[in-house]
Length: 128
Image 1: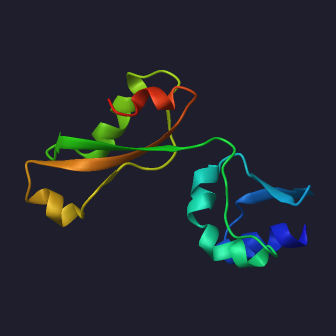
Image 2 (image 1 turned 90 degrees about the vertical axis):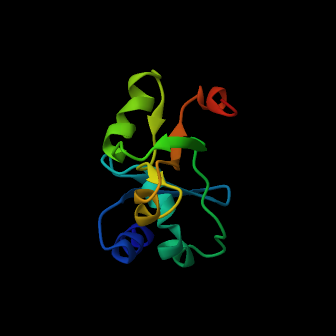
């Protein structure tokens, strides 16, 4: 409970629900409304609190996809609906983002976005 409270304090919010230590591995369970990928992206904030910890691993691996030549006239909000609407079982683990800055994208007709997904089907999307 001490470690859980210390991590939540470092993060200035309640992300971690429980922590357990089994065989030298620390298992962190997030609250229902928090995606583990969000916590993973903030690991640098709290990793020093766990003695001997050097990295964080997700139980459900995430796959990063780069989608090239996407028209910049579409908003990221619009683009976000496409992958999950037309690919059942696919879940976005982070917000979509342009590979370059928004300012750079504004001056281009097309650009590249980064999509982070998780799904047993995720390997099917690689190299497509």
